[in-house]
Image (cartoon, rainbow, N blue to C red):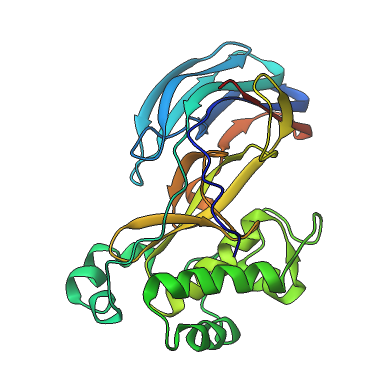
Length: 287
């Protein structure tokens, strides 16, 4: 596992643009965007706005998992739709593991009831014999928080980061069998192993500023990122894709059981099929 960098909080601007082009005019479009960074004990949201072209009417609400959602609909005929989310956040220092629960605590009725949804199997995170066996072996002689770190490190070591071998609908089992994937897959595999040994765990979506030594004012082309949070007496996050702690370069956006709960943009429409989708993310360190 990588050692802590000791970096202090950063201020980062994120501009996330999603564009759709349709083969024939769309006459009705209903959408939800989960693109607004969280404001909590780990980071402070300074400002955020979501704009669309063509303009739409929108409203915001907080979903079941605590994520801010911008919902909007468009009824004027259109052949293109662009959604631009612009945010400035002050990120926190390195997130340390929480060592406040024993294995007996995790089996208690109170914990099983409170965090049942983060222990259940899903389409993206199904029960799998091989992953369960491996997770059980890593649990031995370790405390819960140590098992989280060992599992995340194992996933990082045994998988290769490779685009194109998995898709947005691939499960943890698909990625594990391939031995390859992207951050979404690393997170799902880690979640499957943690839940297999009774550690409540959830999926986190957000962004990662690519350069550990990024200069103030430097804008870098980035992308959406994913990692996990585990409950071992308190929630804390870790990034299995890079085998690093969550720190100043991570921008937290949404949480849920798996990717299905945090999809950045989803919706329905009536009209021509989407012929092109463009997604760009620009991140700038401001301070």
